[in-house]
Amino acid sequence: MNDQIDSSQKIMRFSKPERNMHWALAIPFMICYTTALVLIVVYNPDPSRPYRELLSWIHRISGVCLFIFPMATIFKSRNNIRINFQNIKEAWTWSLADIKWLCLMGFAAISNKVSLPEQGKYNAAEKVNFMALTATYPLYILTGVLIWVTDGLLISWLIHFGMALIATPLIAGHLFMAMVNPSSRAALPGMFSGFVDREFVKHHHPKWYRENFEQSYAANKKTAPQPTESSHQDFQVSDTIK
Image 1 (tube, helix red, strand yellow):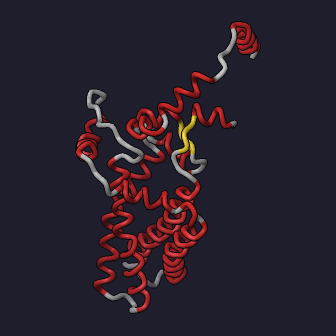
Image 2 (cartoon, helix red, strand yellow):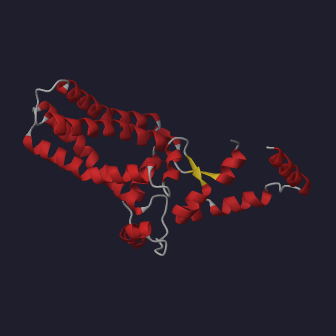
Image 3 (cartoon, rainbow, N blue to C red):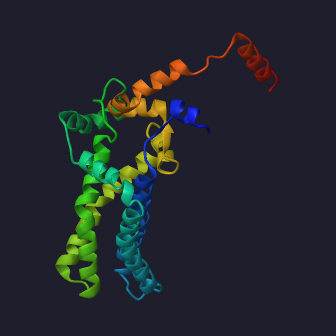
């Protein structure tokens, strides 16, 4: 894909530092969450079942990675780290439109008559996830270390477990919107390549699109070479042969 196509049909939504940080957090966190779920559901009723110790160590090692991977990502992208702090700032900056969006999103999912307020780079639901992450991340690390070194200090365990419980609907909603919901899963490629379809951004994040891309796209469209009548006929012929 050349630069002209990227600039006209695709929009860079997530830069490499943003994508690296996302996966540096998401992969170890999901391993921690899954192993914790298995330990609680399967092994708490019967601790004598096999592989409990192995699963426990996978959970602990993933917890260490949950600290090391983001720190390594910050160091590697230290020249471009500002964008991650800008994202945090945006997630914690709310407007009346964000509150309205959050209140109406359920109704909009079942009725086309409900219109949602314009959103920026992140919609209100994404901001909630972002806020939950930034607020609980230090506590996950701290309570995890205390549970490990104190052999399960009760207050630390309760905080650790409580945060995971609160995170459960957020994780479920995030995975549903990213991989299942037809209207939003088009954004998923953005976490791999960085690019998402321009029309998707224009529809789901109109404020961000208008402020950052609308004028440049209009300018590119004016300067782009227009197809001639003969080339249009050639296309029709070749398409018929196919």
